[in-house]
Length: 86
Image 1 (spheres, rainbow, N blue to C red):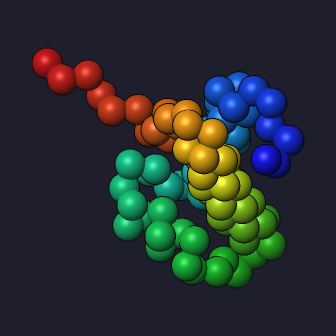
Image 2: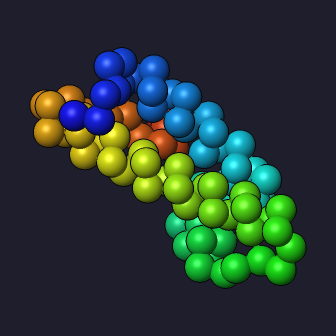
């Protein structure tokens, strides 16, 4: 266990940061191709590349937390909630 004691709160905080850095990078998290392109392409200026690297690290951390939750028998909520169907 990683030391996360309150998975729902930890994921909520992590997701907020992921959404922030995705916005900084100009990436729509719903569009997998945009996310993959952002993570694959290194940027010329330091600030843009720093945001890309941070987003990548946060996404990796989320996967680790999700894995721990599943191992503990919990179901992690999706990063992008499914819109309600009309």
